[in-house]
Image 1 (cartoon, rainbow, N blue to C red):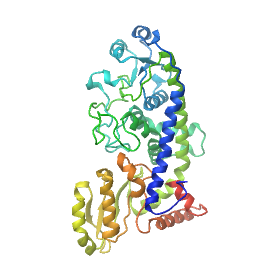
Image 2: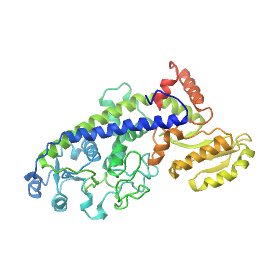
Image 3: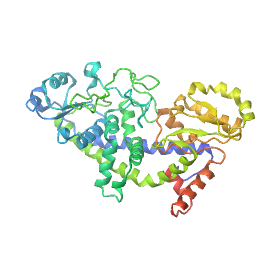
Image 4: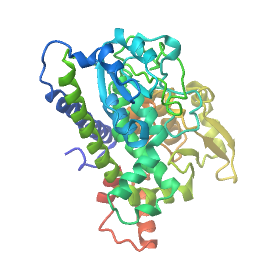
Length: 430
């Protein structure tokens, strides 16, 4: 059992890989369940033609590419129906790419187009990472957003609050904005990010499968439209990733069942994140007293007690790693014992895993100083896809495990919480 062994760092790396493999298996299972609804019949139903759809031109409509859509499309439709009144009862119809331009131009009602971006003018395509999201908690430079990511970024907090209140969870109405930020991050990382990866042509380990994506994971053939949700009556475009030739009725039936399944899984993810929220808040409060943290759980900077002579001895290695180029800087500290602050910007690990490991080696081996910050052994694979999640901030170093246990015990005792040992609690937090 990968979650039961607390061994040397190499086992922590394996532990992280095992945990990610279980999530990947769940994602693949969800796609398999969708395909299990398929009962293929050749041909295209008349209701899929432009003529058949034009008769309801005044009715809101959601269009999908015939035989080609992703998990993101199902998720986007589920969120869209939940949060946008115009699309609450909007039917889903499947059309061929050649018919979409004529159909959209003939309609005057709200129309959402999913999975058909490649057949339109590039200036109207959806870009996956809006330029104004650097200060948003879904900022990511290597994993672009799909339609589901966009809609969740816009409606995630309100959607989560309504789901929790609707489930009649105790104290649900007392959720603060900070709590909703934490829950949104957790649900996005566990549930929505796999759809983003799939729609971007990336697997969960960050490898590139789509030739339109550069090695850095940047979409090159889509332009920006950050008004996607605010101007919902304009078409929304998302590239699909798999195709099966089906007749329209079969495909619509399969898709509607998949949307229902996705929404049910989303509710389960929200409930699980809410149940873990008290444990996360205890850990976050402990770290907030030690480090400067953003309310969403991102570590902004850490103090490293570096002696001046240690810093002098380590300068050659620091220069070789080229810390400044990776966004890491040294500032004057408050005392002689801790003369420097080491500043790690939010995206510092995006320079690469090797850079992160080299920095850790400098502080723990060369400089003989404890390193407080990212848990590198556990988050190496997260660094590969460039996303920082709510559970990625914890200490590592010479006394990290004992230090974290002490913090947990102290917070629990001061809060009147009785726990039988910290090991299960820490494993649940991870």
